[in-house]
Amino acid sequence: MPNFQQSATLLCRPVEEFGNDGLVEEMWAVKAMDHAEIYFNLLTSVHPSLLRLTPYDDQIYQTFRQDFPDLEVDVLTDDILKSAEAKLSWRQFAEKFNKLEDYSYGTLLRANASKEFSSENALLVVRIQFLAVEIARNREGCNDEVYRKFRPPPKITKRTTVVTD
Image (cartoon, rainbow, N blue to C red; front, side, top):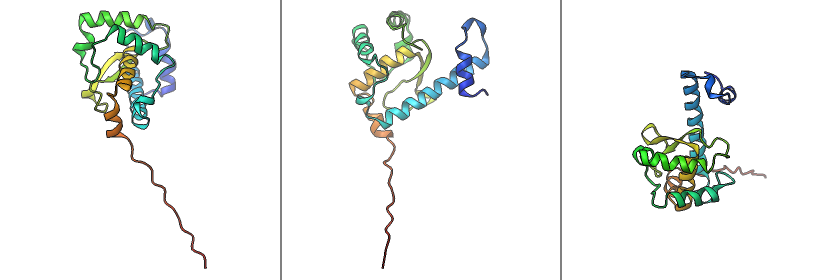
């Protein structure tokens, strides 16, 4: 399997060059899993209310809540995010952020904010959906439980005592 750097370089090439290449799909999956793991580690290391995912968090959140005022972000499903009506709304939302790098990359999103990533608790979304939902979860307290539940224990340092006569 190619390493991450090779994958990133290859994935920057024009999409027309690939067709339905299984290796490319595998590399995207690896990249999405790496992103999910890094984000989860960050989420459990820093209180969610303090996280800034992009320099545009305020704008993303404000636009998200204007476009989706009633969307509850604590538990999501494919039906909620990918119905015909939802797809149209999300497409219009995403286009407002098409200047952001990687805004349309495939990204994994936890379906239930109170649980860790797993195959049962992952939805494939575009990156701007991930950012909008996770910024909302962080600001609205939905990620507080996962922070408390999965936070690594504090490191204990051993003290050595030197005895002199």
